[in-house]
Length: 425
Image (tube, rainbow, N blue to C red; front, side):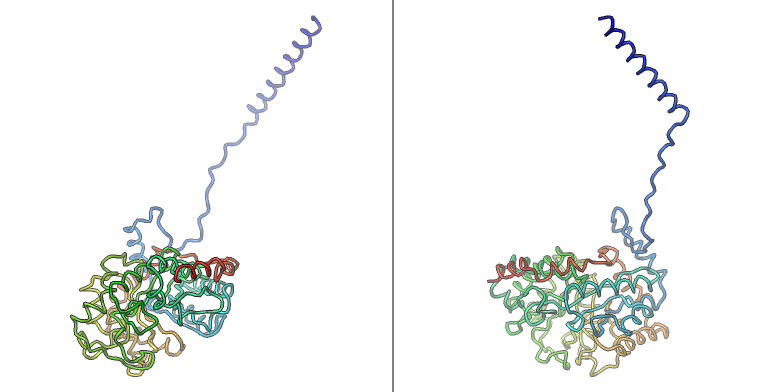
């Protein structure tokens, strides 16, 4: 028993000595206080979102950014252009680097596979980031309406035409299909879908049908589906192409209906969308068709009476207005590209769409630039549009890089194809 007590005493003494030695080390060599970690922010981008995403702050940021931009940079933001090929060519690189173009539209000629489109979007965004001092990302758009208008048809999900949806789908089914469509576009780095078509027609496969209210209801769900997938919708073709007899791609078409008839039928889907939905979640595309009830001379796309007086002032639309392609015969057969550029801006267009030829794109740009320098267009008018565009980019903060592998898995997946089939048959 004495032996055990002796051993316990030894253990206690040794433990006390060890503790004393450790305390001594801590006192002699105290551990330095942990330095406060500093998180390195990304390279300053002037379109960085504020922490609270306060609309007032975004408005202030947009104003400040527009003030810093040169006239050429501002005009560039007002243009969306197309190019040829599945890789960037001289034309598109030059337009991005020199004219500071704000957006690009894709066609089948640019789209080979989901992976390739995602890589193309990344490459062009990189070019824009390197060449634009304000780091404003590009907007990518395409016409993915469904049916006959379906880019990269063999690789994407089989989106039905709006006519088919109007006949065989519910409004909810239209939402589900639009969300699938939007998720595939977003995976490839595409931000805008030039859809839905809100033209009222029972003949055109691009339309939901001849019922204005149903066209609005289905269009509303298409917009929501795209939005919920991270894509902005573009309503077209204001104030309604349903009565047009000539394809605007080819030449001028004139709708002779009176104001009352147009406003109680053709314009109903647009009016209701503007009245009931958040105008920051869609753009409005204006057609090249003529409407003598509002303007006896000019087509809608270059008519202040239709864009400013009707769409802005009467219908109270405050979002982004985009032209239809200015190379269409309805306008290009009758106006030079220089004149088209300045007339569209004077009428109230925010983004000018020039889809094909480099020379035409440069001419439109130069027409606007010359008109501002000569005083024909006030720079404050340019600022008005650019503020809308910059505000939109600040609010949405789309990723400037997408994952090509994700695009390859997402676009045209078997799950998507199954859901498309289930929602319209």
